Length: 127
Image (tube, rainbow, N blue to C red; front, side, top):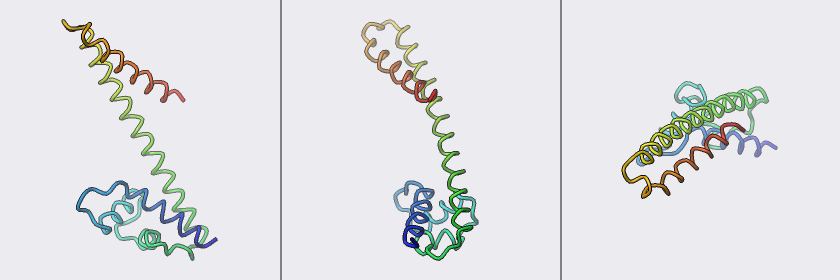
């Protein structure tokens, strides 16, 4: 059971660190995880989780990490949804511009493809 706790904590911290830009090291990733989860930079819990040393954590400490991760994850989801809505607006504007241009027939396949993406984004946001 303790290995499962350590594995879960490590996965949470590594996911919160996000993708690693080229040239960034583990120290940078640990800092990113701390900031994402609301811990001070260099916090021992993040470091322990990263290196799989969270097996001896109390239930309270693990639940706190899980709650912070849930909040972070929900925020990431909201941000992604907002980005998709922005893209849908841009795609719709581009489709309208192509449709209203002098080569509307030439660009019809592009207009249809853009509008299909807009519909998929709209359908996804309604679920």
